[in-house]
Amino acid sequence: CSGRLGHSNDVAETWSGPSQGVAVDVQQWSDRIGRLGVWAPTDVLPVEDASALAVLLQDLGYGALWVPETLGRDPFAHVALLADRAQDLVFATGIANIHHRLPGPMLQAASTLAEQTGGRFLLGIGVSHQPLVEGIRHVPYGKPLATMRAYLDGMDSSMYLAPAPTEPAPRLLAALGPMMLDLAAERADGAHTYWVTPEHTAVARAALGPDKLLCVEHKVVLTDDPALARTTAEGALGMYIDLPNYRNNWLRLGYTNEEIDGRASRFLDAVVAWGDADALRSRVQEHLDAGADHVCIQALTPGHALRPDHDAYRALAPAG
View 1: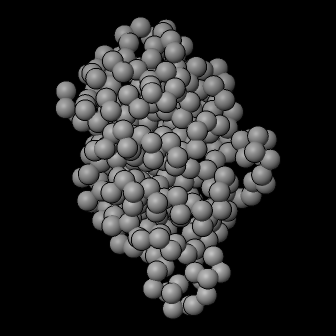
View 2: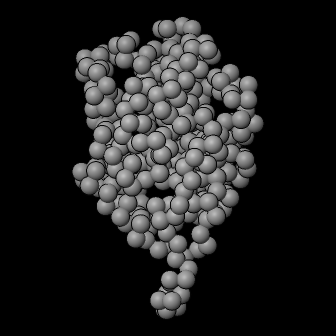
View 3: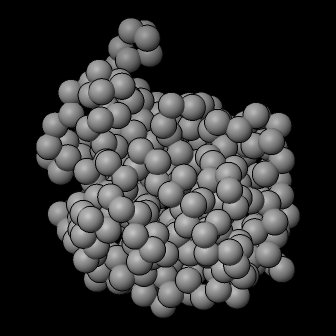
């Protein structure tokens, strides 16, 4: 390493920065990933099932597959495998936890995938949640906005000595509240929102302005049985219901603590759409009408909230 960095001219000639330092054509990316993508917990599926889902989504015409980072597979290593199996699909992190890696390694991982997939990668990053970061990872959790701003500074000042990707990965922030949305407008290529409603999408678009990517996740259950749909929604809520970043956002949207804690139908039906394919398409369209560029559908199998519903993805496919 010391030999490679021995001359400042060598560093200057080979350094390449993150997306913030390189022009990213937001409209081109919006067109590329299209209006529909999929968010799926492939990080915990058997690897062959995850690969088969990626290939299926590619064949059905979805524009992107969004993968999480929780306690399963490393998202960057996981995307590297999936991108090799589905060679026309775009992949995105929804989201990579900034507390899991320093800014320089985050830049390295994103740039590596952007280069090695031929530009089929979007980087979604976020501050995650205090119970996960401190309670499980045992890492200090600071003030989210200041922590994210400092992290972006670190990414923007980090060196990357490999060949720069021809198409750098857009950088999206996981953003729910007004201050993080403002930071996404200022320092990123857009925002990725999760557990939101079309009303929030309108707020997010207003905060971001017209020239940023807004990629919205929404959960759906393909069933006409309201009891089954709501039971499935409750299963999906799981630990999320007690995470302050989500709860605070639901409260801002007008739901009460009593409705959230009581899993009221009004609340469940707002955050998890259910019904036939036309009803689910209608909810997706509400997000698009409110300003989303791209809706990442998370289809929950009725009665099995953590299992992706292949039938729903077939029914809602862009090519279908």
